[in-house]
Image (cartoon, rainbow, N blue to C red; front, side, top):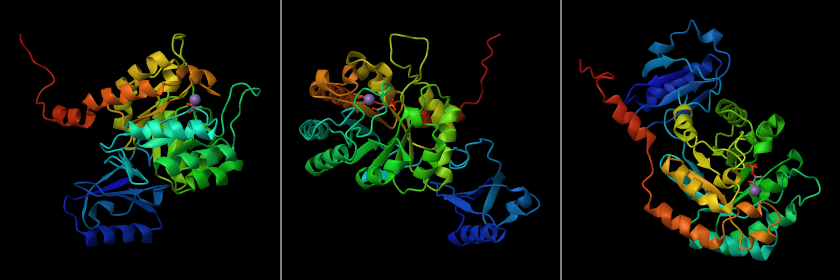
Length: 352
Ligand code: PEP
Ligand code: MN
């Protein structure tokens, strides 16, 4: 349930309303908007049914949030969420590019790639120290040693670190080194892990699962948010379909669809979707053109020696090319389209 406050409702009115709801035994979540403040009420509200909610000070209307992903829904929080990482903003028109190797292999490569990323305008460095591999016999990541290599690259470039957490047992180590914690496709529905992440104060990139629906993705974000961490960045990395010419199918229509459903930033991972270096940049461009809030893209200086996902790694020169192209791009703005659509007077032009 949300209480939409009147345009220009005073601080005092808002506070009085919050206090009253709290007196009735409910927690609230405040979403300060450009025009109107929205007060969200979470949990079982049956006891509120008889209460005079609509006559509380400054309240314009009372709405039920129909989506099961309450905190993640746009109904609950109409304005875009903007998440800040070390001074870098993402969401609400702020776009970011995150680049780096799939796996952290050695400190020289990671530092080099961080410098390439930085020189071409990337905002954050990615790199996996804990790797979810299909085979138990392939490289599983350097663990804490890999995290230390990322830190070295951060010291050299100032780029914040995005790295994956796979298991609750590594939470303290990853928390110590990461600026943004990545939850990978395979763990999208690892609910105990999501709940633990929800207790942290660090931003999270939550990738969609290999066969997940948008609703399931948002429900997973809700797991994190319901524990108190509302700094969730959704990442579209494609799903498995019948199409064998791509590693995963990434539908860019999901960007405006999800923008309607949620206020959380949405980024695109073209690397794990395209699966081949040759096609990654086109998909990256398409994702940004469709209005994504950013990209997370894999890059390696010598892909044939990369310890994972070498086939899909951009070369530094590819990354430079992509970033130049992105600078010229005027991305689609779905919010602008909604405004345009609102002004339409008719949906039917009769000519007969
Ligand atoms: C990765 O980012 O390297 C990764 C393993 O991604 P995903 O979880 O999307 O497969
Ligand atoms: Mn990878």
